[in-house]
Length: 149
Image (tube, rainbow, N blue to C red; front, side, top):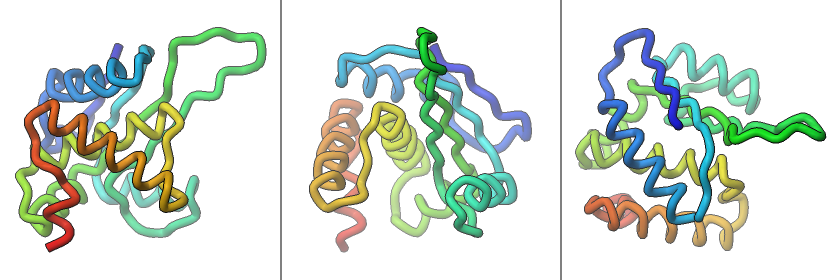
């Protein structure tokens, strides 16, 4: 289940779009669970980025995996926070549709909640390959081809 929050009424895709992107990602990894998705502005994500990653700038997306207390069972996978301002600006800079970039950022963050990372070249290659596969399944183009130009 997805809990979707956009209290600032920022421009973004529908809850159904987010549901579809997360569901495809979870099914591909044979996973299930609850995810919270919150849409925020640049000021909010910069504060979160500063507090949790010690980077004092806005970013496109942050993923916060849920760490259940010992002895507790939960379907909670974690929370995703997406910055509408950054995602829209990046889509324009990368000459993508906003919808394509929203889908990519949602899939990217969902993979982080499932334990994927991109700290090493091997991890990055694995994660990017999964993103490309999932986006292709959703009939979106490879986001990395556009970046290579």
